[in-house]
Image (cartoon, helix red, strand yellow):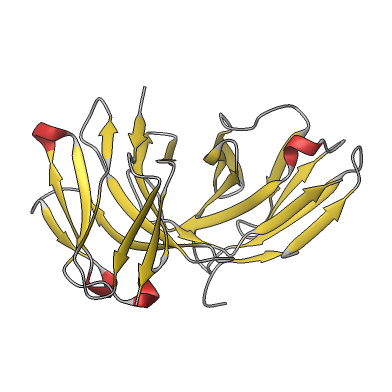
Length: 115
Length: 115
């Protein structure tokens, strides 16, 4: 069955520090992978996606993610975190069949940023 | 409108009452999705519409839950005889999907509280 694991429930970093959020997936076919961010009281905003091609993908707000098939991972990175990045981050895989492309989400990682 | 809108933003209801949640997708988007976000279950898929048809209803948790979409646009999620475990944030998303995988754009959600 398809699944997504985000091992870190909560991460705290200092402003200006680098960030890596982990995501591992289980999916039988070629995975379609997403990272979304959710600020308090808000919906989900798409940060970036991987469908095919270059395994290093760039997203909005200075985020990037690298798809590693051998490790079944799609980790999110940012070289220098800003206080406004404090939010919850969700990794997802698209379960694509002819009749659907529903998203299967991980449990999320809450990012706290200290000044 | 510019994005996906949902109404109401908050809904408090008594156990046993019926509720209707509304979603207005991005204009021109043929695909519409409902998800539920709860503390116990995380983010989970409920139903997917393509036009006015629902080819994937696999996530609806019980027959108390139903959804419809009219005119290929607005969708309504109805929960009958609400239970306390229905308390959650209900998120709607839309995309331009016709086949394959797509980018889903999320609304701000409706927070449902069942007392």
